[in-house]
Image 1 (cartoon, rainbow, N blue to C red):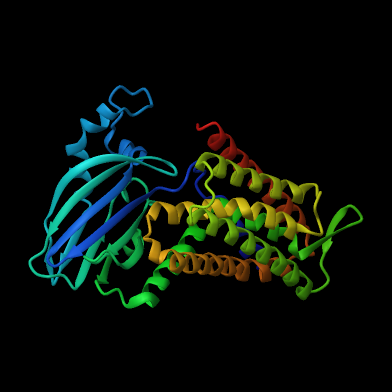
Image 2 (image 1 turned 90 degrees about the vertical axis):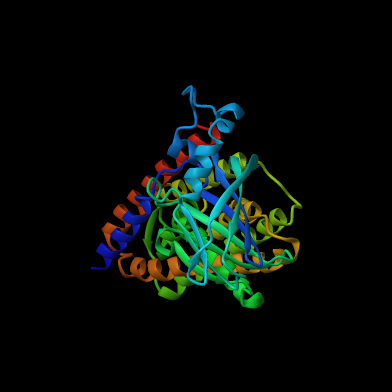
Length: 372
């Protein structure tokens, strides 16, 4: 029974989409001033191309003329998938100017719009459904701001929570902190490369390399101690680079970072097949965790957070990432320990799972490194 549960868990992770690039996100900033809502919506041009076919000549490259010629269609498409309301009444939306801006993962259209509510807004209803019909993994990252420029709330909008209501006061710093925690949890759960890297390090935690083969670890405490070292090393490392990158002290090209993250997954998985580092995997977790931190930072960087919320965002997001990791460990470790002595675990889960992870991560690396 334990073996079946473990196999289901591993299969679910390995059935994740072989997405080469950063997950599909849009960035929605709403500023409320009395009965007026000013919006700025950054949407990836690659996503709009998939939905609207912006590449008129079909050469695989979007030009400014191609994008500009479809501004009306872009505005109509986007605003038909966003509803704002207050006090039970909708706030009609009117499209404004459009620009193009670069994020860490490519070019985005910047759509500005205006919402006119019937009365001054104290609670804003948001119904978001952009791209859900063609990409269920798409998420909208929302910042709600008051007229004085202070952040009232942040949220991740997806198919399972497309309708949300936000108090303009935001509930203070505690509520903002909670929203950043939720963003961190969600990011680790949809960050399949981060999960598979962690899983590659966890798979041998219930075994020990002895006499040129993997053998069952003696006690659960020994396995848990090994996992604690790995998770702690990974946490410390990615916290350092997450902080440096978010504060703008260190910046690396997104393509390099995403390629290096994929490479780290390949190396960690192959090490399970022919161990080079068997007893001190926490060292690998630390070194590669430095790279993964830059990947985490891209989410906060693209949100364009105000300087006075950076510390709150960093701490909250990091807590969320750790909570997401702990949930994965708590689910995986007891199951793995229960079947650690079986050939099913050593050959099917450890060997077979690591091989599949390595092949999937190698595909990611090739796509990311060569921008395929």
